[in-house]
Length: 429
Image (cartoon, rainbow, N blue to C red; front, side, top):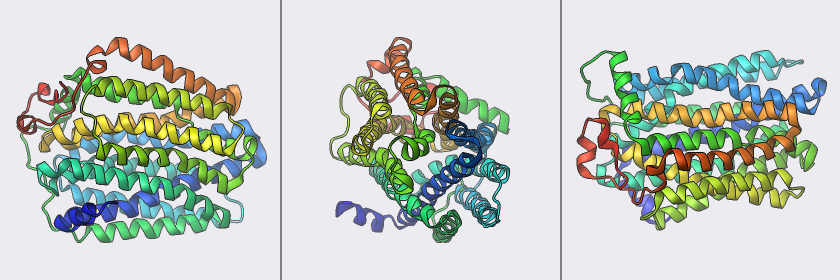
């Protein structure tokens, strides 16, 4: 973090408190995710074998995605009608209860898989509300002209926790999964406590219309611009096919033979590359050919997945995952610039819900796809299939969304922040 960034946090104290709270929360999410995946794989491997264990890790992703899919649009409308900070705090309180339930379940002499999957589903429901509200509250804490720096700092924080969290989660798993869950509960509680100190009002201005009408308005806002729709759908299908997160326990245990510590290192690989790219983008932002560079980055994501699939070296595997993370960061940078800066405040919850639904679809549903592919093709075959699929999607989307391919500059014109129609989101020229 540069010297200017701590000054920014002190200058905007409520944003600094929000930043610190999200630091605790994001670290908890990473430790929890690593622990859930490792525990499910370890329990299933004892009786079901390698391929079926990877499949069940993928099912874990599906359990978290389904409630998120069902509730996201409702949660986005809720974030545009009620106090966003309070929604975030209530969502985190539910997650604390879930983690405590995992502690009890894990400390049982014979832990069962079914309760773990049930708790994972509740996690997904809580995050359906946490995502839109957390995304929409950030622009309320800083002036509009400071938004790019706030987004960059928040992104760097996320990537930092993705680097440290899986590594720390791997170490805690090596001690005991219950210990990892206990640490996670403490981190969630710290996040809630920090959020209570925010004094800036986070209640959005109420707009006319019922929930269903407002939900349709948010969908129309996204659907009305092919550049935004193309960007978030490209990310969805590329990561859906190319994501290898659900396969990492199998690669760490049975292909690379590096154990729990190596598993945490593999999980940190994408974040290392993403953090480096986030630093580069904060210093040298994309000024021209943003669309073309996004497509090249997604293609690089697919190629890096293929390298990882065929690697037999932990160093090469981590390097491939780091390159993959850097490529994904470019896509995220374009998407977040559109969603956060351009969207009017009264619609941020709904638009964030749509964007978050696509992101979660690419992550949780991607884990399910990887698990199914691993069951049919084995872990290596599943990763190869994903890399090739990502390259195919990149070429297809270049034909379906030529406006995105030829998009030049990412901007946030002043009038866009106050415009209402879907066309106002066209910030790429």
